[in-house]
Structures are given as C-alpha cells and as structure tokens.
Length: 98
Image 1: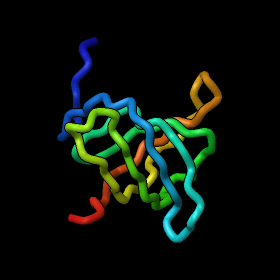
Image 2: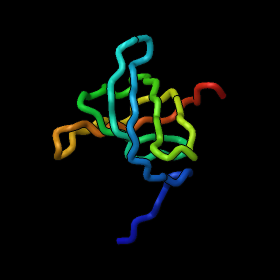
Image 3: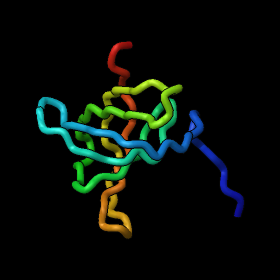
Image 4: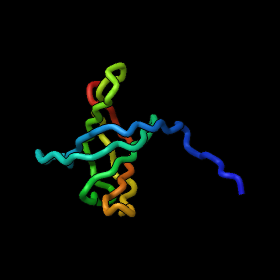
C-alpha cells in the first residue's frame, strides 16, 4: 500500500534545541524539536503533556540564517518513545510577534 501525505503543509526536519512552558506558568522545560510545518510541530521532551494543553514553545535553530521562533500550540498527541522520552505533537495556533 502506498503512503499518501494528507497534511496541507509539508514537514521540515529541524532537530534543534527548544524550550516550552505551559500557558500561565513560569517554569520552562527543555526539549528537542524534531520537525515543523506551517500548522504543527513535533518535539521530544522528558515529561508528558496532556492533550489539549496550551503551550508556548521557543525554537532556537542552530543555523544563524534561520531566526528563532516562538509559537503558541495546542497539544494534539503525546506518546512515549522507545527511548523513554515523550513525543509531543502540537497544532500551531499563533506565532508570537505576528
């Protein structure tokens, strides 16, 4: 069976450091952004985040030609990976500063 991509925005591999915090909280958590698209982001973190949680995520690309990004996302999936970390998918709801 052939795989058919259904996303409206193609995903780009990023593999960059990031931080995130739950909306309304000051505590930041560290993570690794795996990929991003125009409508979503996938990252890995040490702690699980419940579905529907609003997050503020801050990505810091390693290449200086790409600017840092702060976005507001809603968690749509959180699964534990084979490494014991959590893979968290978020739908982008807005970009800070735009």
